[in-house]
Image (cartoon, rainbow, N blue to C red; front, side, top):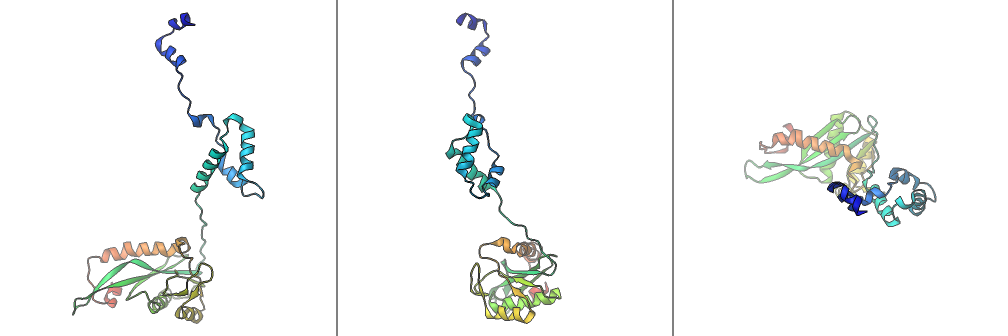
Length: 236
């Protein structure tokens, strides 16, 4: 009553009359989202069923169904979906072209062209080969792959290129059709062609890293030099 209230100090009175608000999230009990995620993989298990079990166990401290679904969706989006690739020695050779190019300046006309940089990387050892070519046409791809095999001193079981139009007559995620020159190269060396899926850089992550190494360790150091032909550039 007021008589007792007068005997209380001001801070205690304010705390009793105006208690601190309780955060909304503090009233709810968080489910084990990782366990729920695993349960959803079992046949017949749905998010509705899991929410009903969760609500039955926790009553008033359970989230409403809509909030439960939203929070699970946020958890599922946060999961990193990837599969680790295990590379056996000599199994795969990954090939690609770098995004960077190098200027070639004609010593007579002064015309400037851009040399393309081919990169090949072995899956297990990360042994890397790079060379410059005039274009990224099929002939340059095939010559560069042959040069990479000579540099390595052997032939892998699988050759993993991207799916550029120069190499694939019919690019496709599941059954791409290789250019005649690439198919003949595979037959000649006895190597199977296994193109990476379009828009899946992790299929050829090895050569993606190899391209970065070539750009940072080689091209960056050559940025101040001028070259008049491919032979000079490749020697450098």
